[in-house]
Amino acid sequence: MNHLLSRAPFLALLGVALSACLAAPDDSSAPEPEAAQQDDGLSPKVSFKRLAFGSLSSGDQGPAKNADIEEAQSWVLADGITGAHTQDLQGIKQAGKIPYIHFYIAAGMAKQAYKIDDCNVTSFDRSLCKWGGDYISKHVAQIVAAHGAAAKKVQQIMGQHPVLVHVEPDWYQYTQVTHPGYGNQKAVHALGPSESGAILDKIVDTIHASCASCNVVLDVSPWADDLGAYFSHVKLSSVAYVGLVGKPFNATTGKIDNYTYKSISAITGKKIIVNTAHGAGGWPTEYDATWDGKLDAMWAAGVGGLIESNKSRSHYEGVIAGYKAAHGGGGGTPPPGPEPGGSFGFAVASSINPWWIQVHVSAPGGAKVTSVSATVDGAKYALKLQSWGDWAVSPGSAVPAGAHVVFTAHDAEGHTGTAKSAAWPAK
Image 1 (cartoon, rainbow, N blue to C red):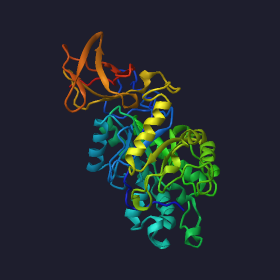
Image 2 (cartoon, rainbow, N blue to C red):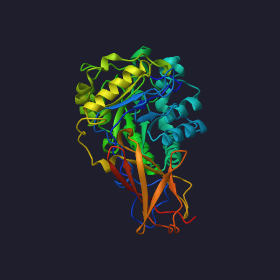
Image 3 (cartoon, rainbow, N blue to C red):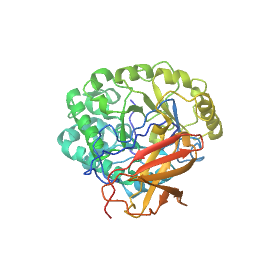
Image 4 (cartoon, rainbow, N blue to C red):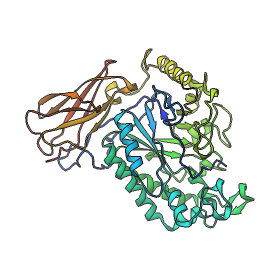
């Protein structure tokens, strides 16, 4: 089994071609920029149009410089979004990257309440394998609410800046009646497939309702006996990607435990984010050279994103640069996908008021943003790049309460992106 340890792992970066459509509903009653919004098809989206790359954001060498998505260094547990998470997310946003954060909330709550631990670090009698499903079945409302609270906090931190949220690693273990790794001992209450799916759907729906910027990556346990039956009870239309995490995963067309990448993608209908950067306890693994030369094949097999170790970083940065150059990032023909304007990220600052317009802008592929303007009721203002990385201006006349500011940005590669803010605050 591929169970995780209680220590949150050293986490990682991804490189990605992004689609961030950041318009808010054109409605005078729309929430303020930092507030959560319902998913109306206009909230921020992250779309991989070619293989994404990432590396560890902490450790001996730091992240690959040409990675575009950064994974938060700590997983979200029973205490929700802490000051450490806030600082980390703010730093990622400030760097103009897309955050990737793990919600391990249900497991954290169960461990805290029942005084138990992950399955591979303790005896069966004191493990999530035995007690996890029991706790979850009795505390569905609290678990769903906790996910909503964490997602709302993420929204408040990130504004309209899109986020990838990896939901509940190893959830599949709660559906197992017996556990082969423990001599087929039985769980106190194994979640049935429909019960499990219904709870996951509530969690995902609550995340979306609480965080318009959040894109859910649903965890896959490749050691599962029947992923088809398991996922048949999950509303996968609400999920952006599926993800593997917890141990090294080689580049291969063969099976990863019980499934190939291709079969996982076929079962779920989703591209896979493969985190192969760390093993037991979250400690960094060695750079995995099995992926060199196989990137196109892995994309074809259903892999959408790869998180590698930051060991041998200079070599890995060369791998990333070579792939991007061959697939339209930093040279070559642009990859298929949305128009360039759809791949910018716009995050309106919480400090805005009628006399202050401020936004953080990231360009596709990490290109340099060269100019940003804001248009309000026909008046156009050129924003200036501030020392902390945001673009801002004090307009010649106050922005009316409820107005929508349209931002336009240009980058050094000749791309243009636009986004419309939510209703502007009165003060």
